[in-house]
Image (tube, rainbow, N blue to C red; front, side, top):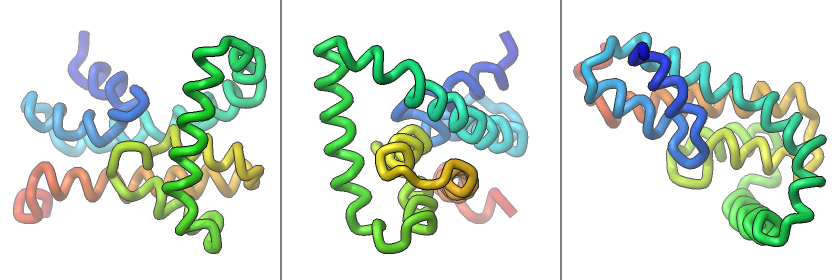
Length: 149
């Protein structure tokens, strides 16, 4: 299988996302620019899928006790981390996603947008820009400034 397909698949894994796919792509010797684009696209393309799952499938699946407990745990964790950004709404959402730490990626940002009832189009834009910024930050950390430019 193509190395970039692996990078794409890693970029859509919750909690790894591009924070994992960019360094892995660099370590495996793949072209940095293609790794970056593939990783950011993976994060951006998962956003509408997450909204669909949250809208249609998640309410049904939450009837399973273990999943409901995991959801409640994740909801509490995400809302606690996001609390400091609530005044800024969509800009806060973008900043929240842009910080490349565990629990602040595209999945958490989409869940947060869903929970807060934010406008989907603007949330998609804010989360996508946050993913792009996170990708830049992870790339700088992974490569060092001198290797990027």
